[in-house]
Length: 303
Image 1 (tube, rainbow, N blue to C red):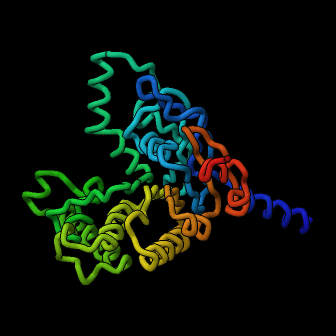
Image 2 (image 1 turned 120 degrees about the vertical axis):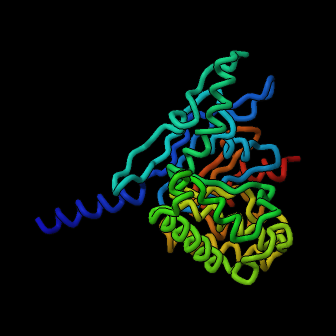
Image 3 (image 1 turned 180 degrees about the horizontal axis):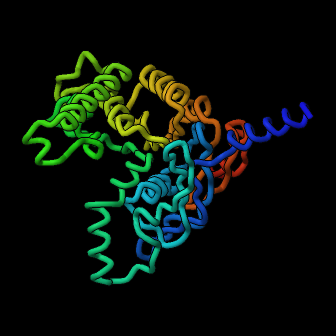
């Protein structure tokens, strides 16, 4: 009996480890006559670091844009595991950003898309725990570091006009919690010395860290990083790798990243997905990808 219980506990533990926080099935995306993605399928495991790699133009950022609600795919479905009050359940991302429908010149559809982008869509995905950074740093350049992190928390602040005018207890607590969280991540990402500087005046490496800090202020379950090491030198890239590892370990989050620095990818990732011309050509652990003939051909070509 004891052995049976141990085996059952082991299986339960294994199932927990194998549980996926994001499932992408047969994702297809077209831009006019260009087929950008074709039947892309892969999973991101909970508490893992998954890298999405491939040559330029392979469709990596298009996948990110579909996952995070900036694009609406033509076909396929995306499931995101939401954590709510110690209860986990998969939610179709289409329920948040709108169902996949044939793309036609429909005025009602256009209004719905504008509404989703303004009042729902990506905002609701952030609330669900899915957040991203961008290939080109997108900060509020005329705001300070602390102000950027406060803006990143706008979904969670008490925005009641009456509460603001009366400075109610809940309003003051909301402001205090936001400031405390901002300073926590400023300290955690080693930005304390520039907390009151304008974002545009920061060195590029610190701008990258600020963007990650702003994302972490939303308490994500899945952090999507689009080429976080772009423009960084070797020392900064190694430092960034250590930051990403520590975020996964200390804050129990899953990470999906696009990256061209193969040494960083191989040393950081638990699982790698390789795209080429909008299709998945390989997936597996770093060692499998390093020795894959298809991956070598995609990057280096053949005679």
